[in-house]
Every structure is written in structure tokens, then in C-alpha cells.
Amino acid sequence: MVLLTSLKQKVIFYLLLISISLSLNASQLRMATTTSTDNTGLLDVLAPIYKKDSGVWLKWISAGTGNALKLGENCDVDIVFVHAPELEEQFIANGFGVDRTAVMYNDFVIIGSPQLKEKFAGKTIKEAFEIIKTEQIKFISRGDNSGTHNKEKSIWQSITGTVPQKERWYVEAGQGMISTINIAMEQRGVTLSDRGTYIKYESNHKGNPPLVIVLEGDTNLNNYYSIMAVNPKNCPKANYQGATDFINWITTDKTQQSIADFKLLDKQLFTPDAKSRQE
Image 1 (cartoon, rainbow, N blue to C red):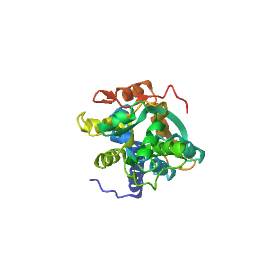
Image 2: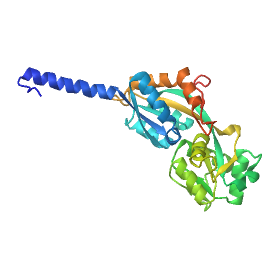
Image 3: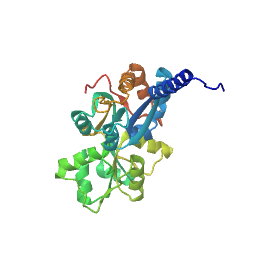
Image 4: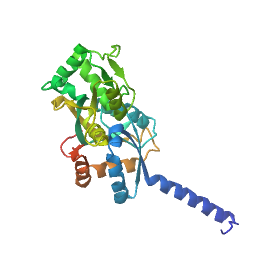
């Protein structure tokens, strides 16, 4: 190694280190996202494509939507990709996020033992929740302020005006979707899941899972995913340009097709939605 003997050489050396550091930061995009985009494997598919297209590594942390938004609020990430419209709107209104953009959707389903399919056949989601309450069927809630948890709470509130947290048959898991499904299986209960994660669970069991979909298709069960840049006014050090580039990329026809093509057990997990829904 050549020794640095002059002040000028040392200055050049340190400037080079700073340049390398800035370059490394610019080549990464930090994202907070919901567990379903991670658990399903969707981001494992999209991230290498984005690296090839842009030269930027996508680094993400998955959590319930509430916690993912908190990471954005605290300036720990550059972008958030979640699925809880009311929480997203509040995040924007509070000045923590900008450029909210539609990406994709799927739907929510109730899953439980195969023996429950007949009980819920032909029922609406509200009728199904009324049956759960009346018959005190054990209900396993995410209990983690995720998008799924918020959807579930909104259904309970529309039926009874409150969430039955004090009832013995209502169990809050405080965990991600796959773990919650496993708890429902162990306790012979039911739970609300996004379809994408359920298909992943189904795939984990090679198409023969212990729990099955016992209710689906209600129009009130649509599950919309949106992406937002962290507001640079709140987080001056956030990579806003990188977030903007990623938002533009994920809504291109090419990437939307990649989302449509993402399947497990030959089942589509998400439907691209960037062109049909305006935020």
C-alpha cells in the first residue's frame, strides 16, 4: 500500500472515503413493509429485478402495518409499503408520508377447520362474525395493529360497536400472519387472513393444509396495498429520490406484470392495481 505522506494526499483519501460512503447509501433503499409482502416471497422476487433495473439494493424490514408506519414516522426507512387505508391516510395527514400510490390488492378470507365450511357457506362476513360471537367459536386475532388486525377490528365494530377483547373465546396473538394461523390450528379456532399469506401457508403444507378457507368472496373483504415515500420535510436524511424512483418502477407495466405472474400452487397471490385505482 502506498503511504500517504502529505496533507494533500490525506485530504484526497478522506474525500474518497466520503464519496464511497455516499455512493453506498445511494445504492440502497430502506423500506418498511407489512408481513404479507415479505412472508409470501413477493419481495424476494421483486428485489433482484429492481437491482438489475436500477443498480439499487432494496433492503426491507417487515412488521404489522402500524409498526411499519412507525418506522417511517421515526425516519428509520425511506419508503413504506402497507395495506391499511385509514392508517395510511392518517400517516399522510400527519405529515409523515407523501406520494401515496396504489400498487396491488387481494382479499381477506376466514380460515378454520374443514368442518366449519358448511357452517359459513353462503354467509356474508358480518353474518360469519355474528356466528363466531353467538357460538363463541375461538377467534385468533393478529392483535398487532397490522392491516389485517385493523380490518378485523372494523368488522367487529360494525357489528357490535366494539372489539370483544375481554371475551374468553377471543385470543390476541400479537404475531405475524403465519404464526397466527398456526395458533388458530393449535387451538382449533378461526382467524382472518389475507389471501396471499394463506396461499403461502397452503404451499408450505404442499397444498393440503390443516386449515382451509371457510368464507371468502364478500365484497367488503378487498385488501388494498399502497406505497408511500417518507416525507423529506419530516426526515431530511431520507432517500426521497430513491423512494420516488422505486414508486415509479413498481407501478410500471413491466413490474405490475411481475406482480401478476407471482404465483404459488399456480394461484395468483396479488392483483396489480396501479392503473385502475387512484389514491
